[in-house]
Image 1 (cartoon, rainbow, N blue to C red):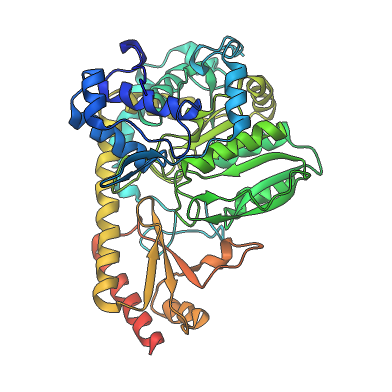
Image 2 (image 1 turned 180 degrees about the vertical axis):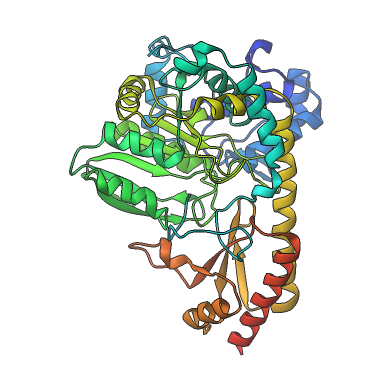
Length: 483
């Protein structure tokens, strides 16, 4: 098969051009499930690209779930593309514009199972960033620089959707690091992910509407939908992410909420096939998808997969993100990208309720993101969190091997520790409490689908010494309980 290579203007590097050529061929149905791909040697000759570059492309496609590589039998397509998804993409070619070029949007126009008061340094509080990684003096410098350069117009006339300076920096970050073709005019600045989800719920839900949520999942978001009068449909999570197969097509669903980058709390990455099935589902039901891009900044073994929004050719995905984990938990600053047909409606509601984000924080963050300091901070934080995770894993494995099983450890601020048969979870929780350790049962996140006994272990808000000490205590408790 002779695959065309995109023009140079479409992507900056040969590797990105090759990646897009193969991925688009799969998404458009030119390459279908079980089709064999040309070898990297043949493609290197055909496209004039180094074979090593194509090896990196194939490896990325395999990690994202689009292809399967087997020694001796070559590479083949593994993602299954729904027929209705292909039809919708084909039908929209002549009329749909890229998100980055949309003219219909005018620039004028804590995840927690218990909602407890989390404290830094308490093992094993989940989902809490370490504020010590961003020195208060460094953040203050960016705020002071922004305040010093603030104009009277910026002080008195902040755009309802947020300052242009910050929206430009976030759009640049999302294009470069999450694969989303967006511009500043597509963004709305929020007080965080829950605020963004609340705005969406108020705009698109009517009393009695059905909303698909993950099970296990984020209880605080479920409450937002319930307060909007929605009826929740709990979809299970397996090794590929959200499983919609149990939902009847007869049920009229208005919205689905997902965490595809690192499922909250199990840590599963949604496969390419499931992502496409979800987009197809939304198109067939005339529904919407809220993508909570949770934990996408902190992957420890490989680059994160592109956002679900990056392949949203049918404009069904409402993308939500925040800086509460990247910087510090009480920053309360997030963002939202809505499809053009919802953008103005959400913006009007946002302007009406008046819960604006302070202009100084917006301009300070814009200044932080404009230079190299922001990405440098993310790299430093990623290294520190990976080090804390490694201490936890190594200590438990050294002192309590055979007493547990770990999953979801490849990204984020927490992992899942599964107990072995016969261990007493309530007894472990009480013993840990006496030892100064907080253990969150996974069952706190479950609703209709029961899972085996497990704990959600957070590690990000600890020092290395605290992580070591707490891990040793937990290992001892696991050993004693297993006897």
